[in-house]
Length: 123
Image 1: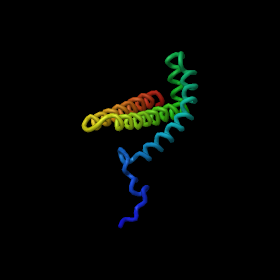
Image 2: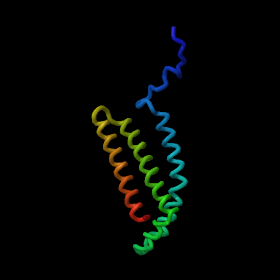
Image 3: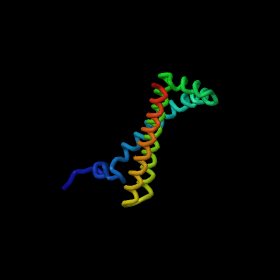
Image 4: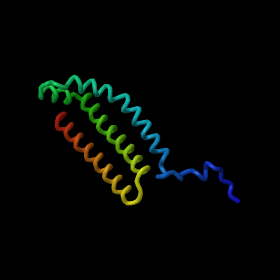
């Protein structure tokens, strides 16, 4: 006779086995983005329409560079996890694996490109 509760039997039986981890990552990154994106939009809006040198000077400031890097990294990780959840919900088999690999590669590529461009401006 096994003495397992219903909760213990259901643990780890989600679609990907990491549903709670995905849920909390999305919640935390969503709150983080809700806090930093308005500040970033204010900074970006002030730089918008300036000359090339004014924009480079704005983004060369350490606070703005760090804020831009955070928005890039956290925003694209949030997108990646959201897209992966959507793919897991609506596709099956090899298509699912290929789409998840494609989304992951796209997000890492965009993050690397954005951080490289930011480093070229800030340094």
